[in-house]
Length: 262
Ligand SMILES: [Fe+2]
Ligand SMILES: [Fe+2]
Image (cartoon, rainbow, N blue to C red):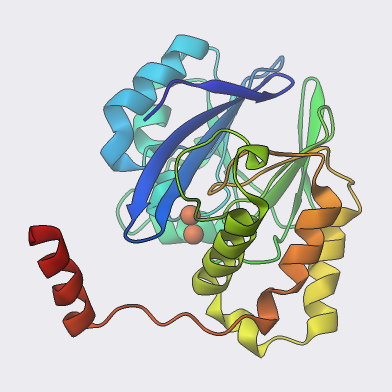
């Protein structure tokens, strides 16, 4: 995991990279908003716990952290939720009711430390409103996209990610072709159900994000996208037309492994 990087006003990214054979890497991001009530967006992966917590607590005192907003219950977003909550006694987790239901199978989060949000509702903190929407693509029914009205930043959860050739901080550091190829691949493989959707209804979910006119789009799985809202919305609209991704079968995996051994 690399050191925290400022990606928007008062907003910092904690980024790990998962290798994707033959293509590059998938970023895994969590974010900290250093407002009057410090707020985390997601908690990164369990395998990154030591580095992640070290980076996090170098930017905010555990006693000062007030909110942890969880975009959805997957391990790459909620993997360190318990560790963060145990270290930060004044922090509450804000998420969809289904996220708690799906995390409850391994940890019954105390009710006095939760705040439930449905898409369309807001979390109001001392100095900002965090407005939630259902993001265009998702792989958990608990998913929330989050718009920070104070900085014009949209947090997409799994939406708007891209598998990129190598680790970079900004979309502008990747060739446009590679970024767009990785965007189509990631968003379509994560949400193969987009093959089944009515294009107009899908576009309405994109419009629900576009209406914020976000200055910066921060995906859980992409580099920082600044001033690219129109471009990313158009790209997202193409996802239902992308050919379904089929993963490697056993024979293909063995061939890849043999290549590595050679
Ligand atoms: Fe996910
Ligand atoms: Fe994810």
